Amino acid sequence: MVNIKEKIQHWLTSKRYNWKNYDVGLLLAVLTLSLISSYVLSLLGIPNVGSFKRQLVSLIAGLFIIAVFSLIDYHTICMYVPILYIISTIMVACTRFSPLGSKGSTDSYRWLDFKIVMFQPSELCKIVIILTLATFLMQHRDRLDSFKTFFLACLIAILPTAFILVQSDLSSSVVIMVLLIIMLISSGMGRKIFGPVVAVLIPISGFLIWYIQQPFQKLLKPYQLERITGFLNPESEALGIMYQQNNSVLSIASGKLYGKRLMEGASESRNYKTVDVIESDFIWTPISEEFGFIGCMVVLALLSVIIIKCFITAKRARDYMGMMIAIGIGSMFCFQIFFNIGVATSILPNTGLPLPFLSNGLSSLLSNMMAIGILINIRIQPNRGSSSSFADSLNSHS
Image (tube, rainbow, N blue to C red):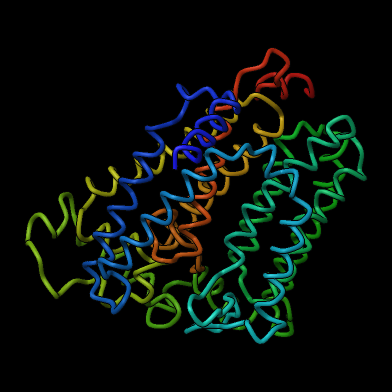
């Protein structure tokens, strides 16, 4: 036992991490959101979702993952990026092209059914793509003005995204494409690349917008198209495809300033009972009704702390790779938070994206915790005079 303790202590000291930079504030924000999630899920009355045992196990597992990945040097993880990329891509493909694939209670094959647990590989795939793109861009940093570098980076993201689209998971595909765009822009690529690309993409985007509205289009499934057309014509679809979002907005409004939990106490009659998937895609709805506007602002403040710390970490990263990983993680959290709340408040078309650290779902929670662990590791890396900060990187490519 003593030998094991000595080995662990030797390993920790040999890494020469700057432990003063271990972000306890970030950890507390994540822990607070997880506890809020556990409490809200326990109020919903959905079997097996809000049970104390399930939430406790998820929280302990999440904190364990943060601890582990905060101690593993992200450079070491990135050494194995090719293997991680191949495994995650195969796992995403297996959801649709293997007996392990399962659609659960939905029409999309997004899960792998291991009998003991259901796992959604697209959540892990987002993290792996961030690490892969960061590693690739670092290795090709001297060739960022090359179209070859641009197209290879796009191929890295597009290959697994194609399998995710086959699952009929449009929302996760959009997240990955947004990550690709933001990481490429932040990488230092100049106008020489983006000018021609934008010039080509604008007419293509216009054509696609026209095409998906045609009765003969094959890109979107019928329910996906209905969500878009319903969003564009909400009055005609008030009792149809927009019914869920309309009820969500009414539920959010009924929370008023302080929320029903404080003003009325516990009750079985809540407006959010008329909304589907309130434990995941529409978790913002019960949060708003139970805790009101003030409660929502507290939750948004905690989520904002996480996002801001992601980009501060990018600015202070010891090297280009750490900068790109932090930007990717921050962009992922920012986009998913905006999109999830946008759907619940009916300012965006209905789609299925979990709210980080709040929505029910083990795959999403553990992947987000992994991202936080990697982010903390970037922060505790020792400072080096030769390291490239966020500002230095941008200035060198401007």
